[in-house]
Length: 115
Image (cartoon, rainbow, N blue to C red; front, side):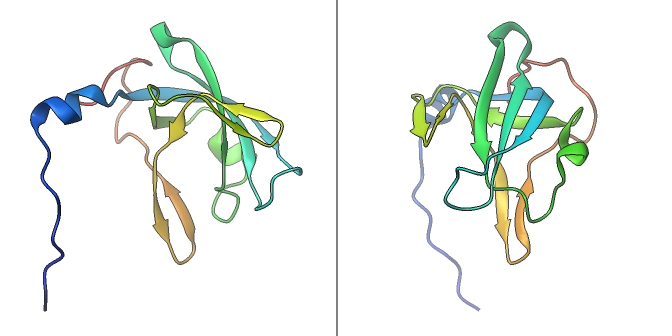
């Protein structure tokens, strides 16, 4: 069995990425998307409410997401995705069945930064 090679980064590189806990407050269908997706609004506490588009329809219904705490990257530049202005990146893991969203094992205050 071979091991994948990975590029190393410095601790200061990791510290620049704002991985933050937030609670999903609203989910809507996004029929204009090229691939099936939702529009999500997430409360990041002191960072405010931010919205994004996410291709997570294979594994999640909107009602599965509202109220769930997720992990988002909130310091990427905003990105236009069709009619949606994405303000953060919803983190997750690609699987054959679809994207599994990164969630928290226990509640933490919205806006808590991953360390």
